[in-house]
Length: 154
Ligand code: SF4
Image 1 (cartoon, protein in one colour):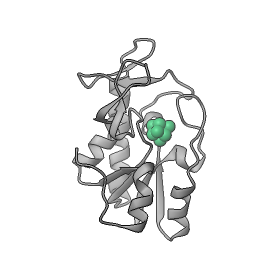
Image 2 (tube, rainbow, N blue to C red):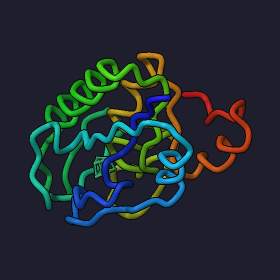
Image 3 (cartoon, rainbow, N blue to C red):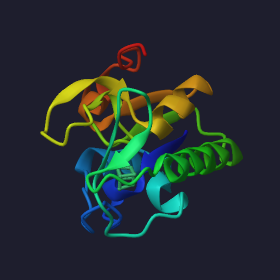
């Protein structure tokens, strides 16, 4: 199976802070014979690394901690990620929890106070709307052992 994954899981230092989030479970997917298709939507959208942290606001726009509206870049990155998913026939995506691009089912609330709310990152939502099964790394373990255990509905 071709699985779209957040690039930072593979050790790519593409996060806003210039770090990665290497994830052993995602690596296990590769060892199990799946083909991992890495994407970093924020880089694909033209943003620099490192970059200012950003959060999805109540109205759906993405605003940095400095007050810059980066919604267009986030949307462009989401479209690019979806295009790659389609090119590789990915039907599943494993994305980084709570990211404003990749978060699946919960994200930070836009106040930059580390407060979590129900919601989806820009890319995760687009992929889910396009029909991919989208989950974060925190759902991955249950999925590995039970393929029917999909993440919560949007
Ligand atoms: S946009 Fe997604 S892939 Fe890129 S650094 Fe953030 S969480 Fe990782």
